[in-house]
Structures are given as structure tokens and as C-alpha cells.
Length: 300
Image 1: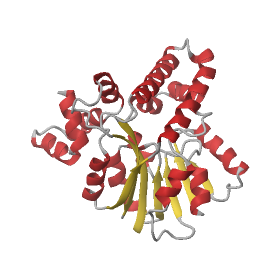
Image 2: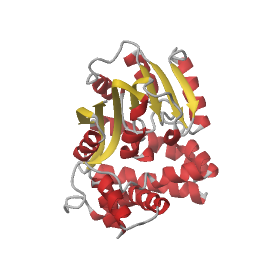
Image 3: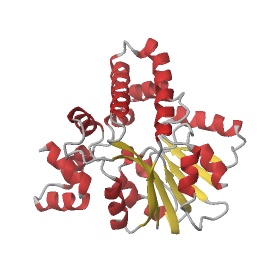
Image 4: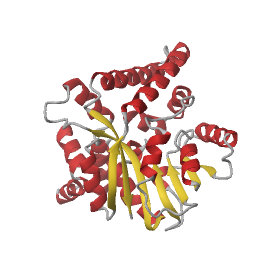
């Protein structure tokens, strides 16, 4: 049942909600069922709910150059698809982390960023990095929950959401943030996607089970395009980030894991996060053609 619900939520979220309402299930239970089916990354759910686990996460990931695969070149390519973007755009950046994407985005776009994250240590690191790059005037860190943003309607030319789609959920972001974009504004995000159908037999079963637990709502790039168009956006295109981004990201993660394992390896929560991260790295290296990260560019 759980696998069937997850597939329903992944491929047809609105039909899934309609079906649950047809069964006369109360709204709060519908929200719970959909959340479990879509299940934004389990580790990030832990991160949000537990201050202690949040601290462990920062110790593991806070020192990385980036919190997800990507690069300046990939950001430049996505920006190049945003025809008509103003010379000094107002950009909302939810889930900014420590600024791995923020600083390149500020330099490449010439815009002013409102960079939002729930973690104060991440934001402190972002502020330090922005000052060191001479970008403090362009990048404004703000502590906040991306699921409950308090921004004025139609106040941004662009929303840039790199590497954090699994936390909010793509469909929730498409629907919830549209009001913040000016007419003709751009929504740009990167998301983990299946490059092969996970139910076709082409994906190893242990990998499929891993991602079914970690990110059940993960789907194909084409599914994301259909969801964006159903939400009233126009898709301007999408592309997969290159393998060099994955190699650089995972090499950085492994270096950092080696350092923190000496202090967190005996901690049950730390050990769990370290182990699941190593499994993810191993799965990707064994089957790099099965899943990847996709940049999507939509216009309101």
C-alpha cells in the first residue's frame, strides 16, 4: 500500500488528493498521508524536527563548498535560459544553505538575493562568505521556513531553488511560491530525478528501495515539467547537471565525513547520517545513469 500511495503522489499528486477526499478522509489525515507518501528526504525531516540532529547535520555538511551537486557553469546555463530577466533582478532563494549557489548566482545575475534558510549557522557562514567575496550588499541572509515564507506578492523577478526541492516538495513549491513572482518572473530549481523508470526493472532493487525511503516523491524530469505546466507555468527547458558536479560534490562530502567521523562516528544519530550518506555515494557511483540532478526553468 505504501509503495502504491508513493507512486500515486509522485506521478499524479492532484488526482491523489482528489481520490483521498472521495474516501471522505479528514483534511488533517489527508495531509499526513500525502506527506508520508511524498516524504521529503527523511534526514531533512529529522533535521527540522530535532535541534540535536540539526546540530549534527551542520557539523557534517556545514563545511562543504556546496550542499548539493552543481557548479557555476550549470547556474550560468540555467540563467541563460531566462530571457528577459532584468539587469538587477530581485531574487528569492529559499533553502540557501551556506551559499554554495548564492554567491555564484549573485555574481552571474547582478541581482539582489534574499537568501532564506532555517539554520542560523548556515546563514552565519553565508554572511561570512558573501563578505569575503565582496557580495554583502547583494546577498541578504534571512532565517525562515521555506514552507511559510512571509513575502509580499509579486515582489521577485526570480525564485532560485537549487538542490533543496526534496525538502519543500516540487508541487508545494510550484503552487506555494507562484504568488511571490512578478508576471513573467522565473522559477528555477534543481531536483533529484530518475533518469530510468524505477519500476521498469532497469534500476537495481536495493537502489530503488533506498530512494523509496529517502525521497519517494522523486520522479522523472518529464513529470516535473507536467507538474509545472499544470500549475500554470511555462516550461522554458531543463537539463541534467554533468558528472563532474557529482564527482566534485561527493569528493568534498567524503573528505568531510572522514574528518567528522572521528567525533560523530560513535554517536547513534551521527552514525546513521554518516552511513546513509556513504550508501548514497556508493549507489550513485555504481549506477550513475539511473538518477541525477535536473535543472528546470519555468516562467510565470
